[in-house]
Length: 264
Image 1: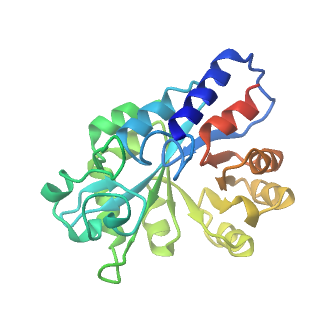
Image 2: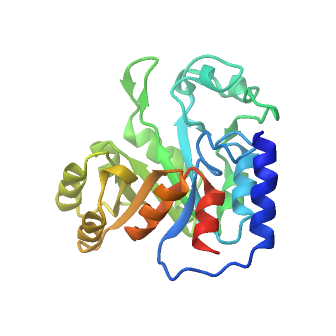
């Protein structure tokens, strides 16, 4: 059924004349094609999903979830435990990279777990890229040192990308990264987000759920010379509501839906 939906949607996008809506909002694919998206045939954060998302000319970029292994290398994966979506159990932060290189998703395509390396960065170099940094290891109930995450990103020369934005909900990580990267703070609470924008001038923007912010609140953050990225956007109705708030970025879980609405 998902494959049929994909074909129908793809046919519609290719056959319809698109008129660009006069909006400043950049459309970003959540975890590439969308997190648990019904219209994607590939696992989120997989190389296949990344390549498919970037094949849409009006997709301005993608968001990817980044986790560190036990040797300090970075991998793309959303959930806390590998068992939810792959053939392996455990947390990435406690597993050796040699083991992680054999991990694949429990999907029809068996996509491999993606290591964030310079080959991946080369694919992303001309797009806006959000890296959602996972700083907490639930298997050991511990916080990963912010300097280790920063050093891993700098070793890959992530800062050389034209428009890379890192996302965190951790104050220490925000402060550690802000001198090298454009950092957005993530929260479900608008009042808390606003206070962070005021208390941390080095913070470049706010990432927040669609249901947690109004159009007036988006404009209030932008009035501080900060940017706003809205996420958890799926349905056509929710997508239109999000567009009407005029955020700088719309991180969508249904990339085709967002593109069809914006360019019709």
